Image (cartoon, rainbow, N blue to C red):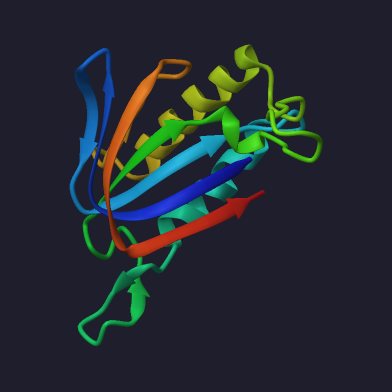
Length: 146
């Protein structure tokens, strides 16, 4: 499982011109699943995301996690995180999880996220052509893999 995490002051996802998820202060998380992933990776990744200390204290030091600042999380599926450009210029996605399995993992991730951090989770739509708008705060962008 791979995630690209951005600390944002706002973010939104649109599908076919309609906003389907948005947050103010929080984390925008692009989520990709690899062929080897199963539900066992979900809780450790969520634990990491919820405890990620990337929000500043009064001295400007990154000491607070999303819960400390009452932030929200926008989870967006993105299989292209498993794209490889080792050969040529066209990405290969052979290491990405098959769509049927990835969708069930994404759905399980959303359910677990909501259970761990109720009313603070927004999402995109798996497999949809999404337009993501964001204001990266910092900028702070991190890559996580389990």
